[in-house]
Structures are given as C-alpha cells and as structure tokens.
Image (cartoon, rainbow, N blue to C red; front, side):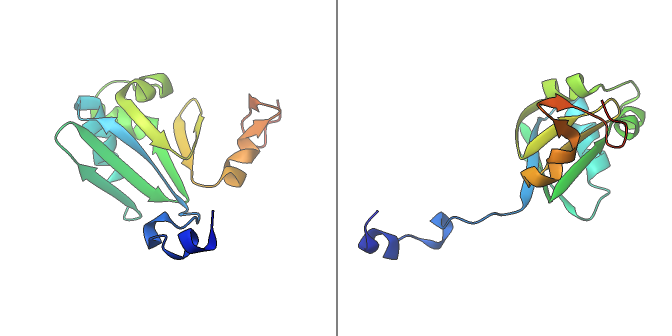
Length: 124
C-alpha cells in the first residue's frame, strides 16, 4: 500500500485488536433464554433485532448452560447452543456445562493442547 493510500484510510479501517467477542443467536425460544441469562451481566451487551439477537462482551463470554437450561425449562446442550447460534466472533470452546468465547486466542489456549480440547487442571 502506498503512503498516500495509508494517509487517507478512515479511522474505522485501522488495524487494532478490539478485545471483543460475541455470538449471534436466532430469535427463538432458546435464543431468548440465552439472552435473558446474559442480560443479567452488566459487562455484556444484548441487542435484539427482528430475527436475531446479538450478544457481545469484552475479553470473554461465558454461557452457563445449567442456568440457561433452568430458564428454558429443559436441557440445553453445547450442541443445541450451536444450532441456535448463527455465527460468532472470537475463539469458542465447548465444555459439558459451559460455552466459552474468548476475544484473544491466548486466553483460549489453556483449553487446547495439540488440537485437543482439555479441561483446565485435569490434563488429558
């Protein structure tokens, strides 16, 4: 890129880490239960659109599937969560009872060893 082109680059095009992560849920019974639980956290922003629900957070989002299941009235597995999620940004880690989304790959690294998912502190 030429120096002249770099000089006219708008601010929104500058490269920098936002340290944000998030998911987009379908606007469904399950998606609304997830949003309801996440709205309790003041560090999380939940935005409702006509067909989707955006859930954004700084550094890390932690979805407690047991708490969401209680609100929903039935079990929500990590795989059901993915079915209701249309997209995400950040590094996602699926555990038995939680879904974690990290903004920074270094924060997700303890959950991954040689491409395998591990539970922290438990080894392989």
